[in-house]
Length: 194
Ligand code: SF4
Image (cartoon, rainbow, N blue to C red; front, side):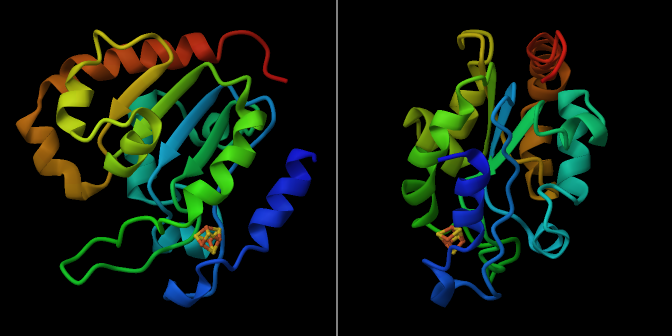
């Protein structure tokens, strides 16, 4: 199957429609030659409405962390943007959004993975993405190991404003780890994109 065929199947998915607050609208970006994979959580309401991932202040912060502008970020030959849940899960009673729907990643990730063979760098955002990718449970511990990780994997909190407190408590992330991330992004994007 081609990537376009798989994306058409995903866009028609209604597996957890009954648990979603709005009609399913899978929001992701995948090109067969992407160099960098962003493993996010789930689209927020703004991304649900726009149909494009990270069209919100979290996206502005993420692009700043990566050191890229929207043109590069939304180029499918540069970035694959694949959250753990493709549809907006609704808001949580105490603020923020609910976690990604648990049905989504087991259903679609294994089928998407063959199209991510060209990925040189995986950026893992938040706890659900971390557990799926490496099995680790503690995001702060995992992110703090940025120096010791093999090239090609970077762990970060989700760039949501809700993690402003985390960023304040862990100043090494912005002061040191982000420089390492930007260098890896630059290396992954070197050479002509196809
Ligand atoms: S969240 Fe995933 S599994 Fe649920 S309807 Fe959307 S695409 Fe399908």
